[in-house]
Length: 220
Image 1 (spheres, rainbow, N blue to C red):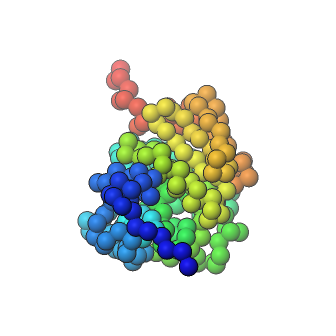
Image 2: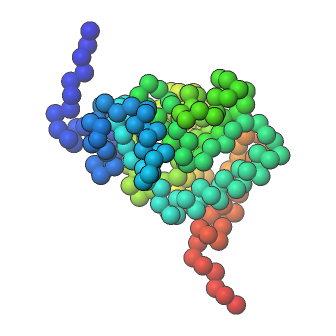
């Protein structure tokens, strides 16, 4: 039986988390011993801390003001689509999703079709035990490419079909259909729901032009 050796240094340990900044890694409970109950306690307690569980390690997932504005804006478009289609469950940034044993993620937005729910009330549990068909991640300043790549691979390994990575700074959206297969859309392109959200379209120019995502317009 093979035994995995512990990391030699803190840098090696952080590398296993995709080079996540150390200030986002919680030391209590000790890394490697954290459980879903710990994640639930911190995500629902007071003061609330948005944390993900990554291989038994609690990693804080901050959402800045700008990211929250974009999430709100995109959820608004998706809500209109949902009201006319009603094909599944959409979740906002606080939904805990179990992707594997010891790994629970908090996608900024997610969708799972009714057909892919494992049970009628599966979406009503504190930690849902199914993957999102669509996962949306809105980049923040503290995100690291390695950690993001790790998260994308976890999504697809769990059964996710599409991942959107939205970058407000570049005003781009990467649409992943596999861990290493993606298309980069700019503000000149239209984001569509493909087979996951049939009929959904959103010109990215409209998304990024939302007033609350930009400086206050001049008053005339």
